[in-house]
Length: 294
Image 1: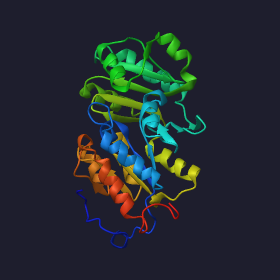
Image 2 (image 1 turned 180 degrees about the vertical axis):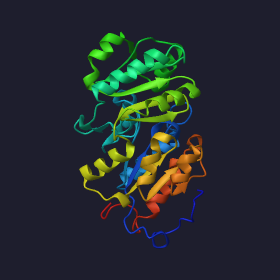
Image 3 (image 1 turned 180 degrees about the horizontal axis):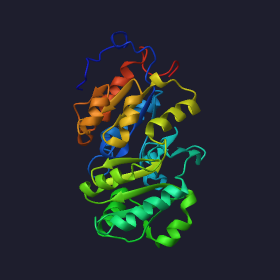
């Protein structure tokens, strides 16, 4: 593991609270380039949770796109979805928190897209309830479907505007230069935009990000922030990584995220970087790993 400062024992780091919780981004962090979690990492996460640790996600994905990994890892802790717009409880099967874009903001972004979308080769996705909708199913929309394992339905702009009161987020797909231009143009609107991948811009409710959601989750579970490690790679992870004492950036992370992280890992997502995070978390536990009695 590479770190900004050496990380050995609890005493040297001043880590008085054991790290029992690991909150990981999915794409580019936990998942490899094939959108899979290597078997060795699946087994290691299972041992971590069996010993008393808690493992969960903070992702931009929808519930349906995250569910295969929730099931694979048998996650029972709250899961942050839609880059913080929703927190889901896998045990009860319900959302603990939900946030929506202001209808006026949705309509404004759609107007911007109508003016710039075709010329800029952009596609607009609208997330409503558990569905994802687009005015056209282009090749890049199809690629997004394959990547996330979701279905994106074609819908008219008029219908999309008619549901503007229950939109969790919007997403723009396209060339990076056009994405950045769109983000700059949208900065005058009271909402949060984040480039979660080079060719992907997410439009979220104002004041919503993974960090805000993580703070809410910590309150919901009655834990302390120093008992959490957060791991990520891209700009939608930036606030979350910087908001906890033990924020980790994987080796393939955006340089801005690395600069904000307390620890920069030597491994990338292709090399199961989370193995090192789990080892570090367990090194903060009292001798005899696990909760008392485990």
